[in-house]
Image (tube, rainbow, N blue to C red):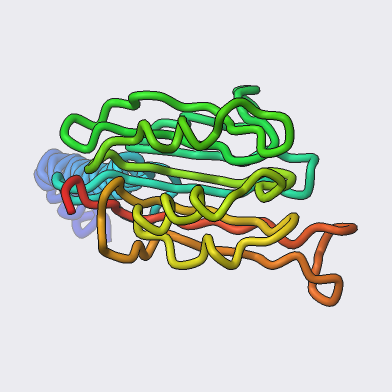
Amino acid sequence: MLCLLKSFCSLWLTVAPYAAVIVVLVVTWAISHDYIRIQLRARKLWGELHVFITSAECNLSGSCPPDHFAIHVRSGAANVVGPKICFDGKTIMSHVLNNVGPGLNIVVVNSENGAVDRCGYLNMKDGEDILAYLKEIKPGEIVIVASFDDATTKMTKEMREIFVGMGSALIESVSYRDNWVFAGRGGTASRSSFEKRAANDDASNVYDGWPMAVEVGGCFPRSS
């Protein structure tokens, strides 16, 4: 029995250093494997986050092609919350920026370089010469519009025809306190797909005397 015990001890003393090395190697491999797996997972997550960050232009779900601009337009809500106009990843007009007002909130953009030529609101109740402002819009310029409060008090047939000439199919039916958003192009014969209207109707209004807010968004082509 003593002989067997001595033999076992002798064998253990011989094997122990190798066993320790094997254990160290296994532990090192496991740690390295986990580290690599964590790195790969982190890279994957960062890639997903990076895609989300770079594609979140104007709240769109994906990035726009190089020959398009990201656009998101939301009308005002009743006469309380102002509209919002986002173009090419930048908020140009909003309630928070305190640069919106009752009537038509409008942004005019140079379609060649994406520069905002001018923006502001046309007060359809007490405003300046609105018709003259609309006539200054040049062919090819991108025009983005969002209503707030009421946009029809001083809306004339000639004004409506100008918007029709920009691609609007709904402006002729916009009435008192309707909500309307639109993105089109000066001097185009093509109907724009960037347009929505919510009619002021007591049966469907979500606010007291006002319809729901409307919004459109997407990738707007640089050229017609």
